[in-house]
Amino acid sequence: MQLRMKSGQVFMEALNDPLLQTSGGKLKDDLYCADDDKALKRLLDRLDELNGADLETRLIDSGDASTKMIYQAQFDRFLKAVGTPVTDYIPLQRIAGFMSL
Image (cartoon, rainbow, N blue to C red; front, side):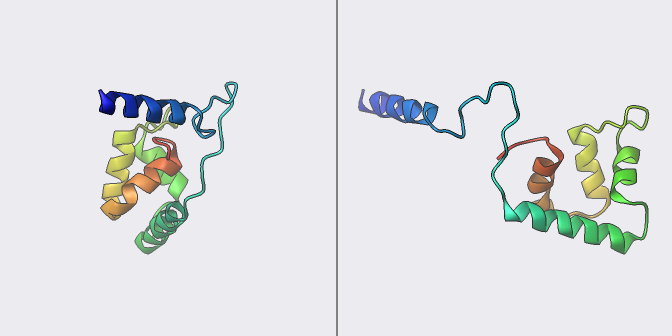
């Protein structure tokens, strides 16, 4: 019973967390994460090393060119194809909008 009471208290505290409150249908600004910037810089440096198309062109080619949309699985294949370190996948997915902090 103690565990249930404690978990209920934690849940109620989480509901009062300003980061979890709704924003009236508007997107909230995510917290800044320096690791995201570093991961993006490593990706751009890697693309420069490959001497190919720019990031936007590569993403369009990796996704659906007719709609210019890319799914997470296609994005992951793109990251693997350009030799992105696995540790950068989550920060880059967050930047691309596939997950949040």
